[in-house]
Length: 170
Image (tube, rainbow, N blue to C red; front, side, top):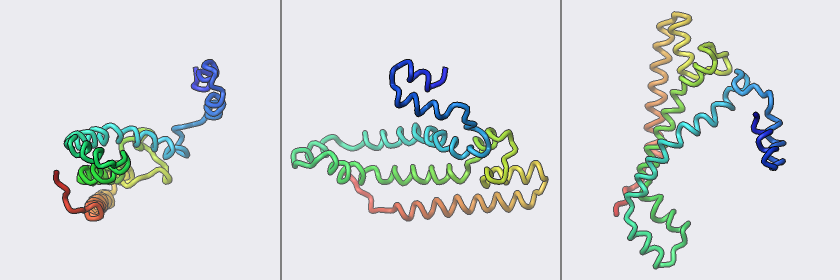
């Protein structure tokens, strides 16, 4: 049973009509692969980042929020003045992990294209593996690996420099 039929049975016609529009859509065809990768990447990153942010926010003393509440600060003001400055380092680390993850996107593309991505679907990792193991161009694959390393290194350094702030302690 498709999602459109499920929503029709539940009486939610607006959603049912929207989901019926996707019937027969080739989600994992190579032409639509990047649009299928977006929700997969978001879903994959959410859990890890949520644990990071939860741990960071639980380390903030409740007394700081109580003092801000007594001073009349709104929830929004508390977030911008207390929460965000105190979890800024964790936010920086999370962004670095996402930059690195974006640079090394390989496994999902390689598996969803049956190890033969077309030119439009290549990322640097898939091009490197294809060059090494299918075309046997070791020099080209090595150059791509060095380029990938440099991109990840400079992407990390740039992100950390842009996110650098004076440490806020409590």
